[in-house]
Image (cartoon, rainbow, N blue to C red; front, top):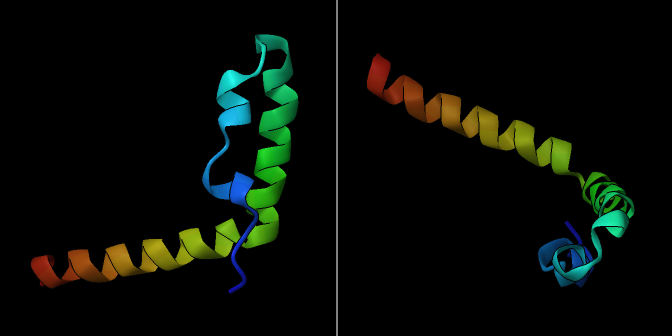
Length: 58
């Protein structure tokens, strides 16, 4: 998987922005996560977690 842009990892702009700018920056950040494949990653994590939990429940 290609490494997403730096703003994906660290987004000080979101933290330092004026409150009225936050929603636009947040929407842009979410778009970057979608392009980077965040939903597929969440599915992988969920599968790994379920697998690990099953080790302790069986």
